[in-house]
Amino acid sequence: MISLPFLKRKGSTVGLDIGSSLIKVIEIDHSGGRPTLTHFGLHRLAPEAIVEGEIMDRDLVIDGIRQCMEKAGVTANSVVSAISGRAVIVKKVVMDKMSAQDAQEAIFWEAEQHVPFDIDDVCLDFQILKEDAGANQMEVLLVAAKKDMVNTHANLIRDAGFSPVAIDVDAFAVQNCFEQGRFDGGEAGSKKVIGLVNIGSDVTNINIIQDECPQFTRDISVGSNNFAEIIQKEMGVAFDEAHAIVSGTLGDRDPVKVKELIRQGAKDLSLGIERSVSFLKAAGDADAIEEIVLSGGGATIPFLKDILAEKHGIEISIHNPLAGIECREGVFGEHEAEIDAIAPLLTVGIGLALRKAGKE
Ligand SMILES: Nc1ncnc2c1ncn2[C@@H]1O[C@H](COP(=O)(O)OP(=O)(O)OP(=O)(O)O)[C@@H](O)[C@H]1O
Ligand SMILES: [Mg+2]
Image 1 (cartoon, rainbow, N blue to C red):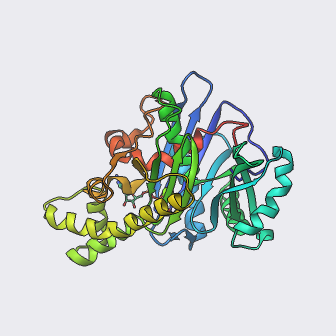
Image 2 (cartoon, protein in one colour):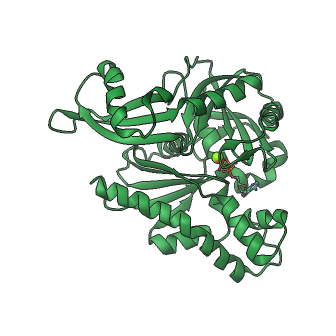
């Protein structure tokens, strides 16, 4: 979305998802009929490398990117990456009807009214969602990201020896991946209001979509780490064990107790979802969400799906980002056996690698 120079079409795209706990590299070949995942790399970062989206130890992250690219065996130099968090603002705005070219200028005036940062400090991008919103107006999706955040991210990638050809937004990469699954499954064009909830380790990206358009997008500072902290504290277990429980290894721990603590941890997440729905209602865009699709490493937290389904009274599923694509045989290497378990955390990386030239 916030594109640096240009994206050359070479048949393949490399998606680089720098998460606060895991770096993921995905290469997708677009030259055949169905997109094919050809290279994959996963690298665990030390917890102190990135904390709540802030890069605390640059060298650790740069080294992590290099190792992950090496593991993936990627030979290309160009990558597509993404940012998320509070430095990114996504807003649907209504403005006078005009050509996309004229909107390029007008969007600055528009952004000044909607973005709580100095306009000189942000990178702006937009997409016309609805050309005719009545009364000679059009509906536009405005995306603003703090320049220093975009530059820090791009420079990190450059310093690791790669070239960032586009910097996207996590929430849009999630949607891109989800839409590919729907397209491939013959379900494109659905009018359902769907909440895409990507639960990372520190940040959750909420993107409520309808008719392939983002209706409301917000990142909240909640992730699987919050659940691990509660478990560590309340069950008196070590850091590693708490994280193993959150990742699905319950061992001989009392499932009733674990469920109760996960329910406790899910409160902030539920509140974030409820608030998003309230915004949607207030804007008159939709009354409710009809379905929630979870992704990210937090999607598989034990009992979480059922707890959220109970709380929000709607259907909840866990996204399978591999549903809409082919995978080269053996591409997951040492992770092949656990691929079903880790698939949800590949959603952003796959969504990035699904981008093609000209589709910004
Ligand atoms: N099999 C698994 N291996 C590793 N982590 C897992 C696994 N299953 C679940 N997890 C959880 O997934 C989390 C990582 O999820 P994800 O990769 O989506 O986050 P991230 O992108 O690193 O973080 P953020 O987006 O918040 O910066 C881990 O912290 C862990 O709690
Ligand atoms: Mg992430």
